[in-house]
Image (tube, rainbow, N blue to C red):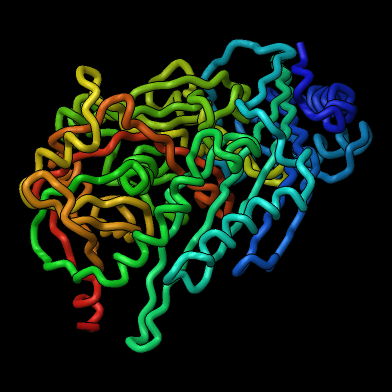
Length: 505
C-alpha cells in the first residue's frame, strides 16, 4: 500500500509504466538482472550573514536510471526523459554498455539473494515537510537567531543557514520488488564570531545541533533546544576569547557526542566499508587497515567499544526502508566487545565475505549515478548496564580536557593515524570543569585511541550527530550519514597545541 504522505506530484509520475517499459525491454534483450530507479531530489539552501539574506538556492534533480547484468557484467544508463519510450531506450543503452564492457571484465558479478518486496512504501520520520513552509517564514527563524546573537555583547558577526533536502525514490526490478520512498533531512545552523581588532585575532562558536532526518519542526525546537543554546553561546564565546592556550601533553579526554561522532565516521565508518577493506575503493578516503583477514581477531578497541551499522534508526541521515539494491534495511554489529566482527556491504560484496544477504548499503546520490556501497549510520552504543551521565564521566577525571563540537580533522589513507580538534574545550581538574582552553588538538592511531576507551555514557547521553556531505567514488558522490554515540572517557591521549605547531606562539 502506498503511504499517502509521499508527495502526490511524485506519485503522479507514470512510475509503474516506466518500470514495465524498461524492465520489459531489458528482459527481451536477455539480461540476467535489471532494475530501474526513478528519483526526484528537491533541495533548498538559505543563508544569512549578519541578519541579511546572502543566498537562497533551490534545485530539482529528476530522472530515471536502468542497471542490467549481461553475461556477468554490469551496464548502466540514465535519462531525464520520463516516458515509456525513453525508459525502454535507456534499458537498451544499459545493455549495450554491459556488452561493450564484457571483454574487459575479469570478475563476473555474483549477487546475494534478497526476498521480493512487492509494492511497499516507506517514509522517514518527520512532522513538517520543510518544502511546504513558505521561504519567508524560514528566513524569519534564521533572522531571529541572528538578531538575538548580534544583540549580545562581544558578538561581531553571525552566519545562519539551513540546507534542506527531500528525496523521492522509486525502485523496481525483474524479480518483482517495487519500492516507493520519501525522506527529508535538514541542518539548521548558526555561527557567532568575535573579533579582537587590537590583537588581530578572532574566535567562533557554532551551534552543536547536528543535521537530522527531521522536518521543519527541528528548527522550531523539536529535537534540539536552540533557544537555550542561543542564550549560552555569547557567554561561551567571550570566555573562549580570553581562554589560555593548552599545554601540550597527555590528558584524559572526555569527548562529547558532538565531537566523537566525527572520529567514529573517519576511523570506524570508512574503515569498515568492505570495498575499502579489500582495496576495491580508494577515492576520497583511501583504503583501510581493517582488512578481512583480521575479521574476528583484530582488537579494534577496549571491551567498552560496541559499534553497529544501522540503516533503520529514527531520524538517521542514512536511514531508509530499502536500499538501491532492493534490500530491506537492518542493524548489525561492526565492532563487538572491542573486536572487529563485520563490514558494511551491498549485494555484490556480500558473497565475497561468505554472507547470504547484504546488509543494505547500496546507494546512489542521483538518478544519473550508479549505486555503490555507502556508509550506514555507524554508531557507538551506550553502556548497556548503567545510565552513566556526562557529569559522572567528568567527575572521574583528575586532570583532563572535555571536548565538544567538531571542527577540523586529518586522517591518513589507511584510516589509522589521525588528528582532530573541536569547537569547545574545557579544562578538567579534580572532577570538575575549570574554564575553557584554546588551541587544542588530539592525536593517536585508531587502535591506540579506541583501546584507551575506559567508559562510555548511558542511554540518556546517547546522541545522533552526522554530516550531509560524505564524499566517495569517482565520479564523486555525496551521501548524508548519522553517527550516534554517548560521551566517552579516553585515557592518556596525546594533546597538541595547534598554535605552537603552526609557529604562532
